[in-house]
Length: 336
Image (cartoon, rainbow, N blue to C red; front, top):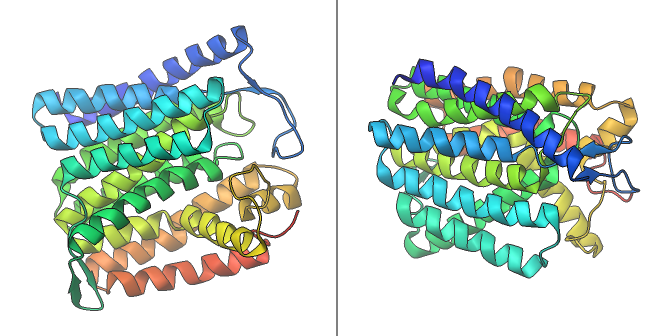
């Protein structure tokens, strides 16, 4: 089995699974009904992200059996991602109290960190930062935030899919150009699984991802960034740069809502991308705008880190500066 044969197969499997899940959701009336907090106006089936989960986990297990991915990485991704997806699936079909969801998320993060050996030493402005046990705790918080922010940012058609595909393919390019080609397989397979789902989710969406898919993507992307960090500290900063649109919008919005005293666990429509979609009256311009930001701004900055040896943390600050400006422009975190 070769990587180039596997990726197209994953795309096809994901397309077929998403179509089957759409029929199941329609038959069982698993429908997202628009309300005052929604960014859509048409009732739409949800839960299609399970196709991403199943396609990626199956491919990862095959890669493990073939020896292309080591067993520790397989256990980290399948165990942590699977647990988050199960929690999300249960929440999609009913309701799980926030405290139990959070406990499950931290358990998944701990599992993943155990198998990938936690947070590696990072380089910041030329200094090596080895945080030891404190670093592992911070890494767990990072993973839990990543999976939740991805859930928060999955609010308009195609956005979460486009972000994941851009970040994964960008990482593949960085790995290839910087001599880490052995790391390409997992982000490429994840991009393939998401691309199959995007066939059904591209604006106007025929099915939504749901918490199972968005949370799964968040923690898998977080774990892939830590896998990259073990190969090179610079790669960790590159992953954070590539995911900058989601990280900045979600974090900026959360900080403003916390400062205002809002109940941050309640649903809302105050993310920057949500204000933008209402301003333009459509989801497509915002989704394509995020793709353009990823391709023409964040990817070139990340390439400078790996090819020109620009300090990763400095590049992160440079990459995020205009994103913060956009968050301010679109009033992220403001009262609706």
